[in-house]
Amino acid sequence: MKLLEVSRLKVNYGGIRAVKEVDLELAEGEFACLIGANGAGKTTTLKAICGVLPAAGGTVRYAGESIGGTPAFALVRKGLVMVPEGRGIFPQLTVEENLRMGAYARADAGVAGDLERMYALFPRLRERRGQTGGTLSGGEQQMLAIGRALMGRPRLLLLDEPSMGLAPIMVEKVFEAVRSASRAGVTILLVEQNARLALSLAARGYVMESGAITISGDTASLAADPRVRAAYLGEGE
Amino acid sequence: MDIFLQQLINGLTLGSIYAMVALGYTMVYGIIQLINFAHGEVVMIGAMIALSVIAALAKSGLHPVLVVAIGTACAVPVCMAVGYVMERVAYRPLRGAPRLAPLITAIGISIVLQHLALMIWSRNNLAFPQIIRTETYPIGGATITNVQIAIVLIALAMMAGLALIVYRTRLGTAMRATAQNLQVAGLMGIDINRIIAATFVIGAALAAVAGVMVGTYYGIAHYTMGSLLGLKAFSAAVLGGIGNLPGAALGGVLLGVVEALGAGYIGDITNLCHFAGVSEALERRCSEDPHLVLFGSNYQDVFAFLVLIAVLVLRPSGLLGERVGDRA
Ligand SMILES: Nc1ncnc2c1ncn2[C@@H]1O[C@H](COP(=O)(O)OP(=O)(O)OP(=O)(O)O)[C@@H](O)[C@H]1O
Ligand SMILES: [Mg+2]
Image (cartoon, rainbow over all chains, first blue to last red; front, side, top):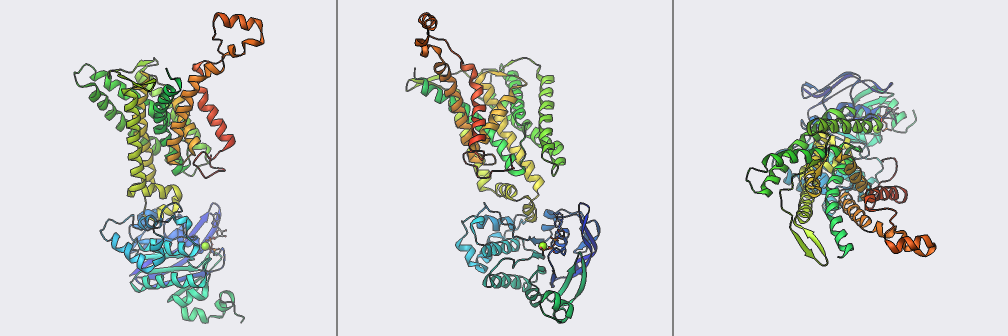
């Protein structure tokens, strides 16, 4: 069974159609990426999947259930977690409070243990645990955003441009955490402008142009596709 | 008698009440950027419910303090329910509407609540039962009453309780998270509708207690008493920096003190007999009666609004606020 099935998804902003037609699927445990130019509709697609934006058409099924119209907070409780574009750190909460908010929906006793795991994963966050989120550097904020999402014990993790604005060393750290979550069995849909990076990490990929999926397949064949190479990997034909 | 000290004591008492009401304004503003102009009416309803209950139990033989406590214990849940219904019925459907819409709605709710109170409690000034006998204690040339002491202490305790909720509990952290970023709060699994409702309900509980305090302190209640009180508490919230909790507490206390000192001294300051030398007629008039006062202490209500105007002109973000701009 597929964990996520999106078919013929359409999303509007007022009268403007930002997503025309998107079909994508993820099997449990899969790591896929969604690449495309600025304004292609990647963020809009993620927001519609996680319940932040309403769909204007099509269906989204998660874990066998249709989730159209379910608000984001209720989906988080079912393990569908998104790390938003721009990180969305709570600037006046401390690092630790931010992390704990990630586990807000959880009722189990494992939160304290997970907090320790996040600090082990990102020692920098442990050093800064009492500091407010707004005072962190961009890279630290991205670590915090990912750590916070992992605190929710996601089953499906949607990541919107986690590498944006980060130095290569920070990108490396952030993606190390993403890879380890993937190895631990979390299903991941990664949106990235950095196509080379995304294609090297994920097993399957989708290419989005002007609100629709135009190419999809396993990342090796996408990376070899001349259209992808020309448009997203900056190589001539 | 030491006028300064006396007015300081009166001001701190009044200011504690303003602070509790101001917190309700600022909490709601902090989370949804709405100025809930009907909040003053919640204070009035708290006073009215307590008045009815206390009047009914006054001759029951129960200890007066217990009777007032029962009155408060009835006022608090009623006001919490009013706060909840207000948010649920009037404000929630307007979430995302242009900002003017909920603002006008707030004024509408205010009118509705006042007229409900008018129908239940009549249009008369009602005597708030003074069943607790006032004891007066001397303090350095001034006096303080047991009621004043109780008001200040209870207000402090309630504000400490609020601070504990907001800064030390999961609900409080979720409230602060929602205030900082509503959409991301949803992505954490926080049901923001519940958090917003909780904010209204907590603010209403503080307002209910403030209503009982006002009634006990002034000994009078009227269905319009919430308007002026609400405006003053709103001014206090702006003075402290709207959206900022410590700011609301500070603004409330400061406003109470300014108002009391103003009321204490305005007669003296605007006494034309200070200038008796300028004319013979004035001289003669003042030798008969040295009080020719331009503004008496009945102008005390003016100070809250002078403070409001001064803050808006000089420091629109308030004493402790940092955000300026389109938000107000
Ligand atoms: N709130 C909004 N109101 C109106 N139009 C919007 C809104 N948000 C996005 N759009 C439009 O929808 C289209 C898709 O935007 P979206 O943010 O999904 O793109 P994206 O693929 O994530 O781009 P980027 O790589 O720059 O983040 C764009 O044309 C954008 O201008
Ligand atoms: Mg985007």
